[in-house]
Image (cartoon, rainbow over all chains, first blue to last red; front, side, top):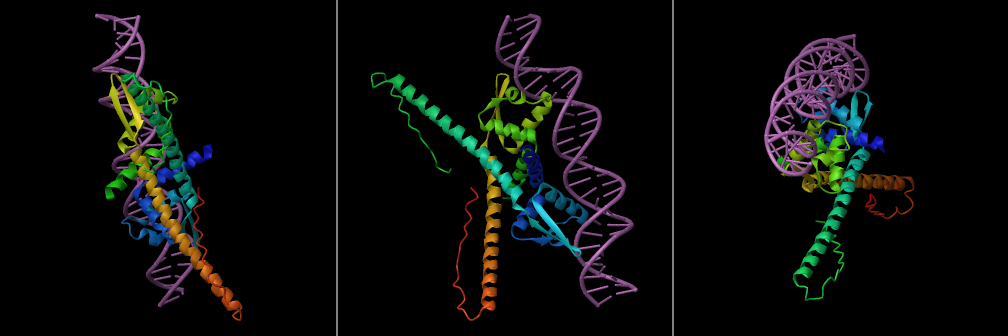
Amino acid sequence: MANQLSQLDQVFAALADPTRRAIVMRLCAGEASVGELADPFDMALPSFMKHIHVLEQSGLLQSEKSGRVRTCRLSPDALLSAEDWFQHQRAIWEARLDRFEAYVMKLKKERAAAKRPSKSAEKTTNKPSKRKGTE
Amino acid sequence: MANQLSQLDQVFAALADPTRRAIVMRLCAGEASVGELADPFDMALPSFMKHIHVLEQSGLLQSEKSGRVRTCRLSPDALLSAEDWFQHQRAIWEARLDRFEAYVMKLKKERAAAKRPSKSAEKTTNKPSKRKGTE
DNA sequence: TCTATAGTTAGCTTCATGGCTAACCAATTG
DNA sequence: CAATTGGTTAGCCATGAAGCTAACTATAGA
């Protein structure tokens, strides 16, 4: 678990660079050699290889050399684990937001009840307001 | 679009640091002051403020000062846009994989047909394999 | 075998990042 | 008013990231 966090460090750091993000996007469409990958970029090969290495060390990329050509492919596990992190945070955030909404709703109701106490007062109708609206 | 990429740079770079990821996770549970946020970390306040600033500039965090206390909250748009990036890549990757699977399936069928041409080759078993099981 | 191709290694610059201390506002509070 | 609290600014330092060139290795092809 603590190990995974350290991998998250590397995955996010890898994806923070536009060149590396472009490489990942390209590899989503299928495997390619280093030369093919490097071609669209105006960059010396050693510099480009550093990016490949960063991606490989982060676990986002696997490569294999046969003859004199190294073929790279995406290894999606790291990508998925990063995506999971987002989904987890979003779940927590949305749960909190649901609670907050329920709280505001309760406040509104109490204020309304305070404004016209002639009406049936503290009704405390707990409307869940489940708001699953994908947004 | 190109503009968004530049924001992705900042968001991913911000999330590459475990301290900042912890701040984001904490803020998912609700807003907090700088002091409250900094408390669990063994770090001088100016250093910590740099992290806050990085998060704010990436668009992940909003803050507001009232009196002498600055309150921070998460602004989820940046988080969502990063999550969108992952989902987009995964969609492409899965589409490619489905095509690849279909291709392998076709190869298998052709090989089976070549092996025993007497039988009427199996009907095109189109198993979509929609792989929605990821979660 | 000779040459061109595809990567690789080594070593160098430059700049950003992440940390620190010290000093400095500006609100609260006694 | 004086002291404390909460944050801010300025400036320093060490490390690492991102780029380059030059030289090298090893395979493929003529």
